[in-house]
Picture 1 (cartoon, rainbow, N blue to C red):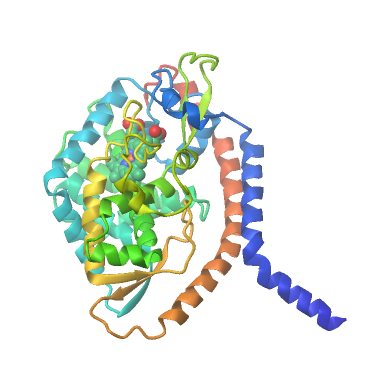
Picture 2 (tube, rainbow, N blue to C red):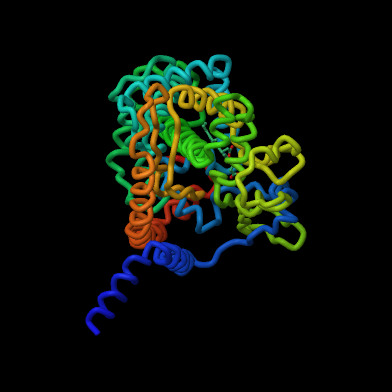
Length: 440
Ligand code: HEM
């Protein structure tokens, strides 16, 4: 009898990675809905573009409980974060500044990104380097965006500040850790000092105070830009590591890297759900409604075998004619970096592939909470000893980490949703600034 109990207990334990994480995620979503309330209209795929492009779907923050959560995760200074500014003069001023700063680097973006990649890759000295792709790539993008903003090479201390901030934001967003406002505020103080000393060589939005300008730089370039670039590149390299045939094709240039990038962002869009608040009626939808645009669902419809990672489909398809909006819709505040990203991602991928073969056995999901475990194998090395064993161990470790991570996400996620609801950063801001203009 005892043996039966022991065997049953061991079987249950061994099976945990196969069912517990999924169950915990479902529970977490239910708790989120309980605390936050069920809010918003899930936009049908058939209406997706028409509603997204509708001029009345232009509210960004005011009037959605969901905004409290995003403001909480993006603090400090979420009220001047471009993504969350309501349309109006401030938004126009901020968006114009972002476009100008991004345009400054365009002509030599590929070269700057490649140089940043080389510096980071030089740090990998082993024949087989186990890395988490997001962690490996974040310093690279921290250097890149520092150079973009300050027009000078990034000192190590500044890079650490930027990575500390961006990593804290994305870890909290994925409910893998709590916010550490001290880390974020350290970067704000640094930026404030640089602005006050006249060391930012770009005109900053004149409608913002100096404090707000520091938050703006932090939010757009040292938070969104660093996080999104690191996540997008981690997805791309994970996909390449998982598909060795595609990887070989990229090295021999028989596979088109642009097709691989399109397919990666189709299957792993960086935005799960974007929301808008309607400022006027749209048919039967009243003003003040929260519209939820689910990118992953939209990217599934109209493709053969939509779950399959198949870059070759893009040889026959035109991105403009299918459900593919990795950078949002042009008519409604699309991503200002949509021109820059493909150029820099191409450059970094080529540098990585020139030096390393990539292999992974870890899971690859849209939210990538495992940060992309991967082996980077020096191409000059002929010894590929024990690669099979290393990959098996990686898979086992990833599965077990999934169990503990899902529990962490359940506890910390529930706490943060509750805390954000309690603080009501967005709700309170608009109660104090009824005209939407800050007077902090
Ligand atoms: C591959 C990387 C990236 C992807 C896939 C991406 C994707 C997106 C998407 C889908 C949106 C629209 C969201 C919505 O409609 O609510 C967006 C908005 C935005 N993105 Fe990106 N992004 C990327 C990189 C960047 C970078 C590097 C920056 C740095 C400047 C950036 C800054 C922004 C800003 C400021 C907005 C808000 C635009 C506005 O409301 O005017 N993104 N991004």
